[in-house]
Each structure stands twice: as C-alpha cells, then as structure tokens.
Image 1 (cartoon, helix red, strand yellow):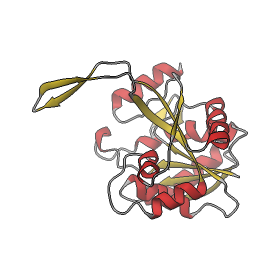
Image 2 (image 1 turned 45 degrees about the vertical axis):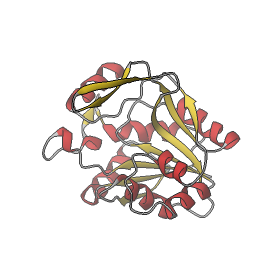
Image 3 (image 1 turned 90 degrees about the horizontal axis):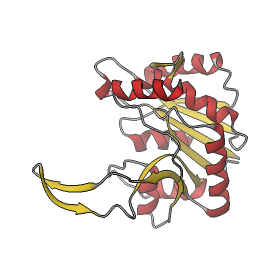
Image 4 (image 1 turned 180 degrees about the horizontal axis):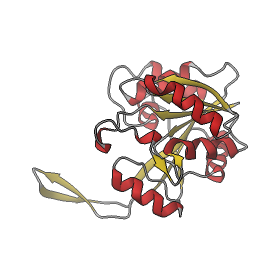
Length: 221
C-alpha cells in the first residue's frame, strides 16, 4: 500500500498576517485541493493523510468531502516544524503501508501522471525525489559580495513529491534528533541512505508569496 502524506501545516508568514496559503483560492479551488485531487486520481496512491494546523482540521475535512477525496484516511494536526508534521503523518500510517509519498500542500501543480511515475520509480529503485537541473548561474556570496561562482553542472533543485519505503523513512526520522531539516530527503540522507532524482521540467512551484499565487494562476489557465 502507498500512503501519501500531504503537509499543509505551515505558518504562511510571507503571505501576511492571518493568511493560510493552503486554503487560499487558486482558480476556484483551495491551494491544497489541487494536490489532493492529483493524488486522488493517481492509481499509484492508495491512501492520503492530510496534515494541517490544528484549527484547520474541521475545515480540511469538509474540503475533502466537497471535492470527493475518497482516499483521505485522516486529517491530523501538524507541528511547528516541517519534520514534526511529517512525523505526525507517519504515526498515522496503517501497518500495511509499504511506501510513503510526502508532498508539500503548497505545490498545487503536480499531476496524477507525475505522481504515478514517481511512485513506480521508487518501487523499482528505492528512495526518490522530484527535481530539475539548476539552469541559473549560482554565486557564493559573503556580506552581499560575490565570493565565487559555483558550478551548476551537478546541481538540482529538489521539490516534492518524495517517495520512500516506509521503513527507511521511519528509521531516518527515529534517528533525526532535533536538528532542522528542510525536506525528507535530507533526513534520509543523514541516516546513510541514498536518494535518487526523478528529473522533470514540469512546473512545480511552491506557493510562498502572493506573487507565487499569481504565477500559479497563470500556469493553470
């Protein structure tokens, strides 16, 4: 069984006071609904666990019913840090879960086809993350002065979904400690496991600012 954990418990500080980007309207649907629908329509995903802020549990449950997310198993409260939210989702996975897909609820542009392809890649070869090659010139900077130019040949921008055998991800989180991690690949890498890149050029931006929301609207039209 493949369980998808959708993380949507962030504070949305760069969106402005009182905002919750996961529930902002994007072309007529809440941002997080786009990801839920893609996972719902992917034949590779069996169950979904949605992790939100505590005060959004009832609203998220109602949202899932509105959009017919039949695979949604549970809506749970996340923590103050991303890894705490992922761990909350992991704790709710049923015993027959074999693979876990983790996705940022603020990335609404994923498709069922991409989800299916990434899951199949993980089932064939182990931990994997969606990503694409860095195309811009990268500079190392100290106090706003350029120190050097970094070779971009082997650099990738990593996104989600990220898919792992459930035992690998649980073991990694068990040994993670209290250090801050920006994604689940980092947690797994620190545990000694290798993670591969599933390369795609499909738009997959993470909505962090109002400008990102405007870009997403343009891409979905």
